[in-house]
Image 1 (tube, rainbow, N blue to C red):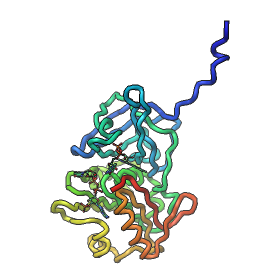
Image 2: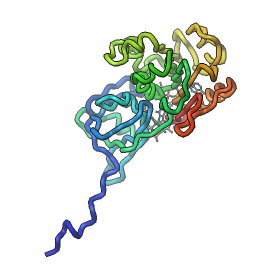
Image 3: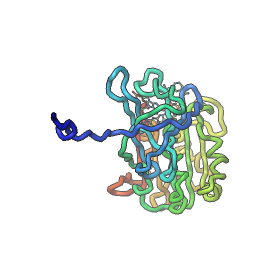
Image 4: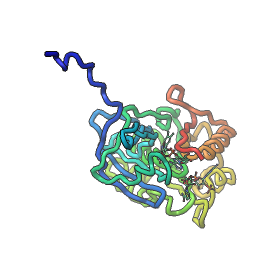
Length: 271
Ligand SMILES: Cc1cc2nc3c(=O)[nH]c(=O)nc-3n(C[C@H](O)[C@H](O)[C@H](O)COP(=O)(O)OP(=O)(O)OC[C@H]3O[C@@H](n4cnc5c(N)ncnc54)[C@H](O)[C@@H]3O)c2cc1C
Ligand SMILES: NC(=O)c1ccc[n+]([C@@H]2O[C@H](COP(=O)([O-])OP(=O)(O)OC[C@H]3O[C@@H](n4cnc5c(N)ncnc54)[C@H](OP(=O)(O)O)[C@@H]3O)[C@@H](O)[C@H]2O)c1
């Protein structure tokens, strides 16, 4: 008789965690959030992203996509903010998940939207469009953010008011957070803008930077300064490219994990 265990190659460790969906919240027919259980051995830095996916259908390969983790590095559950692309290979299915279902998650978080990739400064600007808000939800719930920066500004630009996910949380709910509530109340400013219907701050963030409206609204000096300001950018490629050009014109230099700088960016989606 052959010893099957001895003859078989060692079982290959799976590249993914299989994790339980804890809750799902649908914001609009385009956007939803969900949370999954955090594996005990999963470590990440606030602002990083990870691969999220579902098993393949009919025995096919799993489908995985990059997702920013919306929870801070200390959280017990892992929260995500997702688009619903009607014919998207992943999100056409992911949008149907329910509590108790299983999703796949990669084991290696990574990314540049982390405090480590910025040099010291006074004011941190977190500028995002659409689901590009997700990493800021992580960064603004991290106590390190408030010890490193005196003032933190979250700028979120969307098409419609209904797309302002987490608006209530960023306006008020975060002030009740037992860990960073007091700091958020004193140091965090939320600045939403809406481009395709009337709103108190109308238009793209890039246009409000150029016109100076952003700085007037916040009672701050116009422009960004390499001595004072640090910036993170996340969202559409067009917004990132345009804002990065504006920042470079102010003398800001892009940073990375290897070489921290004045601003960092990550493309969360094309378009
Ligand atoms: C570093 C990184 C972080 C990301 N983080 C997130 C995140 O936190 N939340 C999230 O929803 N997506 C995020 N994405 C996009 C995500 O990886 C997928 O593209 C998205 O889940 C759609 O997957 P899909 O297979 O359904 O469609 P895909 O085939 O991946 O996309 C189809 C098309 O839909 C559009 N699209 C895709 N994602 C978005 C989006 N988020 N917002 C607007 N338009 C989009 C693009 O035009 C794209 O070409 C991230 C991408 C990268 C590279
Ligand atoms: N969210 C919706 O209500 C909606 C509705 C229908 C379809 N969709 C589909 O969903 C996908 C994602 O839509 P989305 O709204 O999340 O993402 P999006 O199209 O990138 O728009 C998000 C926000 O970013 C702004 N923006 C775009 N380019 C910019 C730039 N260069 N500088 C500064 N701001 C910029 C947009 O302003 P502008 O409005 O000025 O472009 C909008 O307010 C798209 O494929 C879209 O076709 C979304």
